[in-house]
Amino acid sequence: MIAKHILQVFGEFAFRFISKKVDILVTRCGFSKSEREDLYQDFALNLLTRSAKYDPNAASWEGFVVVVCENHFADILAHRFAEKRTRQREKYSLNAPVADRNGKRRDRSGKVDECIHHNRTGRRFRSRRDAWEMSDDVQAVVTGLTDFQRAVCAKLMHVGVSAASRELGVSRAAVIKEIGFIRQRFEQAGLRGYL
Image 1 (cartoon, rainbow, N blue to C red):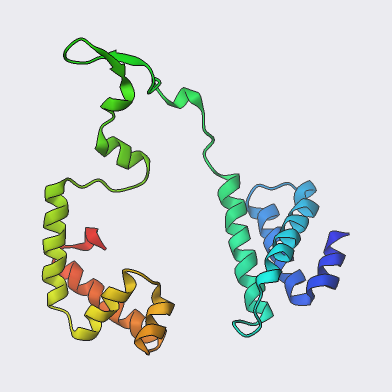
Image 2: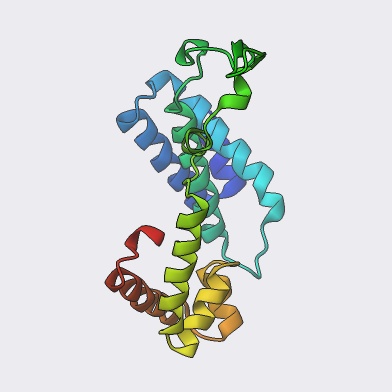
């Protein structure tokens, strides 16, 4: 029933694209056939709410549908396979009191190792010395790059490839080609881990 409404409201392209994504979710990703209508409705609602931001001057309707539906598809999969939180995962509470060296009772939260904290939050931990050495190594490689490659590096610190190509006045392909050369220079210097 909802599929017919998707066809009427969004057109044939959106209907076919959403149908393809729903079929993939049902046949390959562990969703049941009884969830098919719910998935159609979920995609349609997401597309409907985001269609207010559609700008025909920026992209075609088909391109907009593809981006919105692909992103929603990824969100559905991420939500479906996300690891569930559980209190049994932790060995102890950070609020639990422990004795310090002087025998005073303090919260365990003050004893969390910075390296462990960064690993749990998904950030890489580097000591101050490692960070300084990394900065020095990166600077040595960057000084050996051409002016255009340094400009690409400077832009990519703040914006993506598309915006960098617009700001530099060159094609995306040219920026991507330069990124390949820059990557080779870093790898030759043994700095692959910093990329």
